[in-house]
Amino acid sequence: MVTIGIKLFYKEGSSAEVPATGMTKEVAKTITDQIFGVQNIPELQTAPSAIDVTSLEDTEEQSEPGLISGSSLALTMNYKEGVYTDGTEDNSNFEQCLSLSNDNVHSWKIVLPNGRWFAFYGKARTTLAAMAVASAQQFTLSLFKRSKVVTGYDAASAISRNTQDIESVVTA
Image 1 (tube, rainbow, N blue to C red):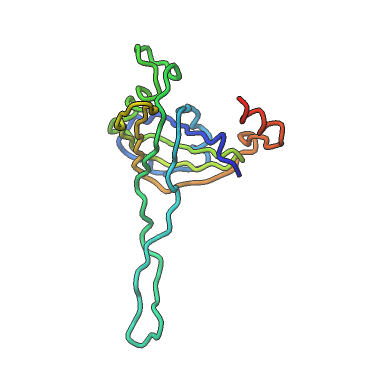
Image 2 (spheres, rainbow, N blue to C red):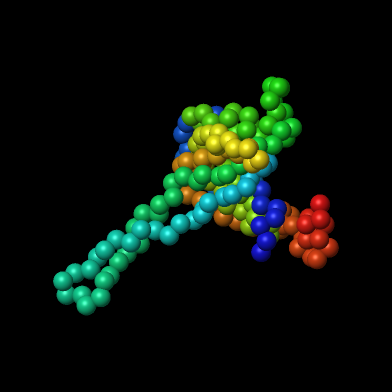
């Protein structure tokens, strides 16, 4: 599967607490505001740590799955102007992400081109990346997960991947 067409969506939260129900597929369907400019998304679902349960009688190491690490995701973002309107002069995706960098828990959804999505609750922090000559201005959107990641599939979100569609994306 090609990664052209991966999208990041959010729904602004109004509380510092995760709803008692946790993330559900029904809640995920309501996450519709898009953030443009995503360049890199880290691993969403990491393997759990191994808890050593080997005893002196064992001839091979024994382990059980432990905690799942990866409580935060650092997304690399390309700065894009004119993609967000909130009444301020700066209508960039950077400003959009800054507005979400508060103590509220927001809903987040990452949608793959084939319609598979991953949703979770989390807090956000936005930091400006280093600047250099002849390079794209970037920033980091760090998402601190506050719930389990729920996954689902939405055929309506799937991008058709026939040859004509891929050629039009590549030549655009």
